[in-house]
Image 1: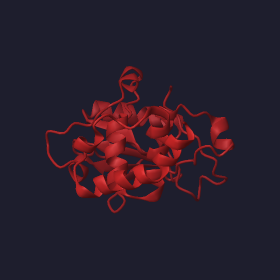
Image 2 (image 1 turned 90 degrees about the horizontal axis):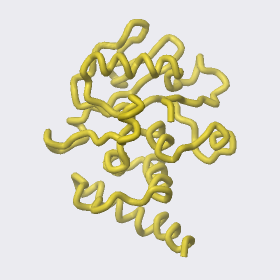
Image 3 (image 1 turned 45 degrees about the horizontal axis):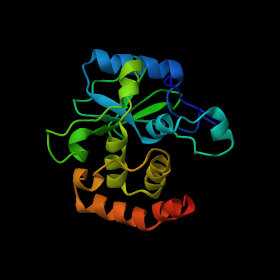
Length: 193
């Protein structure tokens, strides 16, 4: 899969949207040149693992995303030429409202030894996407309904990472996982029988 984004927004001038494909390639190259340790997370990473197509978006199989989210363990470099830094949002953005949201690893990982897991296929393509375990940890920590629904959708396709309970960092994640197993995942497993 190539790194790309789809936006179904009518007016990219008003609604924040992820970077264009060309901007994405430039951003990834810029982060690599800056020796940043990062992986794409959020909806873009989920879509990569689900292997969705543009038709899936049009048929509303999965919601469009309005930003590119990156988990980063090194300091966030200054934005590339033509981009600006928004301190409050912790994001780079352009005059066309294309933006990249950063999540600092230290805010989400409880200790420095934990690494950002990267999907092996994405390492080969150069479009570094978080692996399913890292996405699971991140989305369970968020607790937002849309993030939980995304991870359930992913698990239905690829399964829940082995021994996930032991790889979570806090009680909030364990509680979210238990709620998911009692609700959407149980229904999904019963439907497959």
